[in-house]
Image (tube, rainbow over all chains, first blue to last red):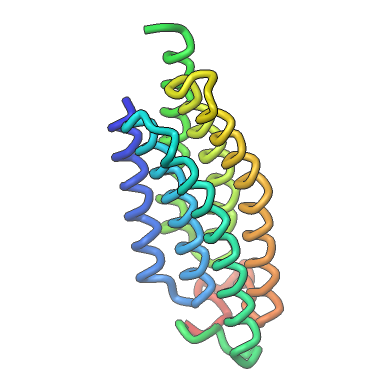
Length: 91
Length: 108
């Protein structure tokens, strides 16, 4: 049961990575990376359940924090670094 | 199998289904704002369902408290990040295509 959930998370992570690679604008890429980070948190919690150790959950909590701060920082950087009439560096 | 583990498995399965559906949606929707909708709305609920589904594995220990903390944190930050992303994209000039045209009005 837990293994099947892990496989489903990995599939969803692969789909998010596909959008991060394809995404026409840089915003699509940021969105995909943020989604990927959320799924990483879930995968870490699941690995903790598989291993039967609660220590993994500390790492997952910290990763959720860093993921949010990183997304906001990347967003602010891209927003201020490019002129307004372009889609972004990834366009 | 106890009742708690069956309920946990059902929650876990629902979360997995939502995650995969969100992954398909993020690839199939036509432009950025609809993809944002697919990813942002689904991820929050899927994370809540999966973390709730993991609670019976840990039982009434410190692990469940940590799961609740992760859930609370994701509950606040995931919609916030999506809102900030939509706002940043909009103020940077990314616009939704009008109903008639196929391609987005932003440069592709």
